Length: 468
Ligand SMILES: C[S@@+](CC[C@H](N)C(=O)[O-])C[C@H]1O[C@@H](n2cnc3c(N)ncnc32)[C@H](O)[C@@H]1O
Ligand SMILES: [Zn+2]
Ligand SMILES: [Zn+2]
Ligand SMILES: [Zn+2]
Ligand SMILES: [Zn+2]
Ligand SMILES: [Zn+2]
Ligand SMILES: [Zn+2]
Image (cartoon, rainbow, N blue to C red):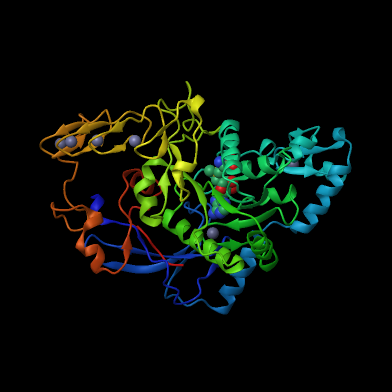
């Protein structure tokens, strides 16, 4: 099956009718298209779960849903939500705090704080005790990261990265931090003993945080459809927070593989709502964590963003950190931001320095290329300039005259397609294909890594268009 048969499309403003809901809120509209770029049948699927095992919602866009099926769906969606209200969980937390530390237990199987009355239901389960005050204010230290890689991808930042990020926010003078899928940043700020503390609100899809936070500290939220699981009251918490006086910043570490264009749409909605409640006219500052190889895709959706050189470290990811068990050139995850990079000082003791010509801090491996007039390294290695390609390339590449571009020496020329994946023309790449614009729909540039992932999750034949 050739790669050219499939693609990924996004139409974010095509709200002809309200999307049906799955347990994760409004679904997104997807569309297949064939190698000629012709679109197939549209269908709705879950916005948050990339694996059918996690949410198998499916509905053809033109499918009629009977009232009986609709009722069954509502019932099913309700049954998939946590049984206890957030208010009740907060009452339990208050009771839990009053217990002596030795009486405070946490079930490591059910991921739940246990009051004495609950113990009988957790016999034989692995219990953690005593739960100290410092564990209570740092729930990530207690909660087992959700194993489900595709949907939740719960990788926690290392302490070093948490401290760097929080210090950076303080130095930039931010007073309020909206943490979206960044629980470690939220808890670090909440538990900080500094006198000048920032305000913070956590939005995350993992309902387990509800048992640790009061109603104005955490909202269960889906960042791929801007959905508040607990309805209007929860949305009100968010609106109040973004409307409070003080400089606001968004910090978000989405699950890897999350659709950038959909997330960019959500960031646009948050910016608009923030501008409406505060009267601000400028862009809302954002720090977004993503791997360096998604830079083209991110810049396409968020053109005012820049990628910083800072290598983001994780504590529970086998590759995304430096050192003997990690990746040779450090973590591939970077920070993307619309804040002027010259204002974000990267730690000198980790080898970062300021490039006057680029007006930003760069890693010690990142050498300024006088021909490109830029510090060109992306992946943590020193890039070398190719005079034929007229750009800097990875040091492992060499120029292939038959492909007319730089490649890994062991590549197979016949497989490294010179032409466009959409129309086969060798004069341009897919992203510049006139067909793409004729279709009046935005297409995403292909990304090898994403293609591989799609193959693995058997989406080969169902490349997607998304409509919100
Ligand atoms: C890669 S982890 C980021 C954690 C971060 N590195 C930290 O240490 O704070 C992704 C986070 O996003 C959350 N998440 C996953 N899917 C989400 C969604 N659709 N909407 C909101 N949060 C989501 C996960 O629960 C998790 O907390
Ligand atoms: Zn779903
Ligand atoms: Zn249990
Ligand atoms: Zn430079
Ligand atoms: Zn160069
Ligand atoms: Zn070259
Ligand atoms: Zn070649």
